[in-house]
Image 1: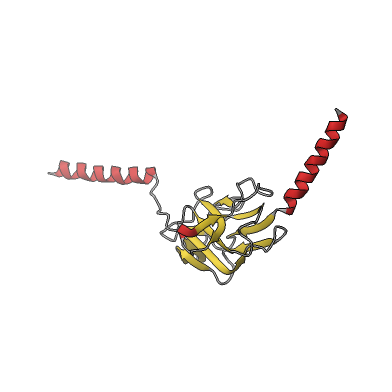
Image 2: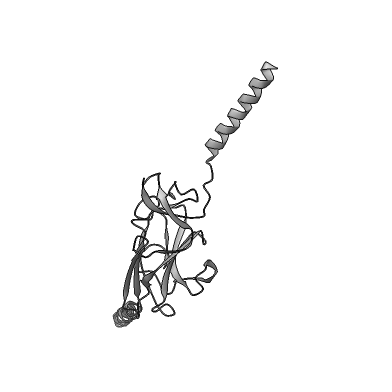
Length: 195
């Protein structure tokens, strides 16, 4: 039994070494540029939308390819994905992902928010040339190119801060809708009583 255990440990170490040799790392986020709803004011709350890192040969949402090769090393999320507010705050995210880079070497990096509601890139954002490379990108980097969405100024949680405006509509919460309906009913009742 001890003999087999020795071989099992050796095999595990070899497998781990092989994986580490195939682990391109990308650190990515938007620490300085909050992502807002389509109104440009309210930032997306924690957990409200997924964000993805990948390539886009067509420079359109339709051409977006998620970088998802290999297992995850540093993050609890699947490789190349994260959530708004993940480990940071509402409207922001910061991720560090690792995995095989085959098919993405030297490719332009794109960040997509929630099924194409925002898509951004930067001429300086490139995947590494090998599996041992590391790339660090941020929406706040100078030279941002917005493919989908626009850049505005937030007035909600980060007043006066440049914010990426997503096309996700701000849906009124149920309590706000109920308040409006009650107001309308009250007004109709008042009109009826006066007539």
